[in-house]
Image 1: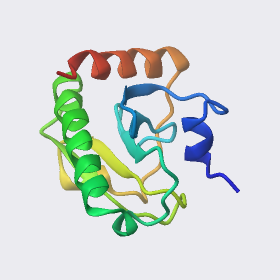
Image 2: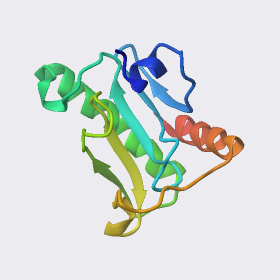
Image 3: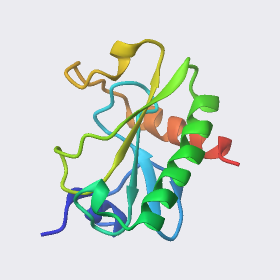
Image 4: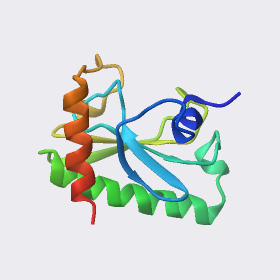
Amino acid sequence: MATIFSRIVSGEIPCYKVAETEKFLAFLDINPLAMGHTLVIPKAEIDYLFDMEETQYADLFLFARQVALALGKAIPCKKVGVAVIGLEVAHAHIHLVPINEIYDIDFRKAKLSFSTAEFVETATRIASAIL
C-alpha cells in the first residue's frame, strides 16, 4: 500500500510544495512545529533512510541543504533544525524546522495550525529563496 508521501508525490493528495526535482520533493508539514516546517523526501518509496543507496542518500541531503538554506532566508530563525525520526510514516523523510532554541524541535509539543493562505504564502516565500 502506498504511503501518504507516495500519494503526495503522485498528486493524489495535494501539498504545499516548496521544491521539486526528478528524484526529490520538499513540502510543508501540515502539522508543523513551526511556521515553515518542511519535509524533504525521496520520490521513490523507501522506508528507512539508511536503506537508500549511497548516491541517492547523498543527493537527498544536498537537496535538503538547498531547501534549508532557502528556509532560513524566508523564515526568521537562528537556525534550521534537522530531524530524522522515521517512525511516523514508512517513507524516508527529513524534517527541516526553523528554530530559535533547542526546544523548538521537540516533537512532543502541540502542533501549530495555519490557514491555507498562510501555508501558500510560506511555501511561496521559501520556494522563491531557493537558488
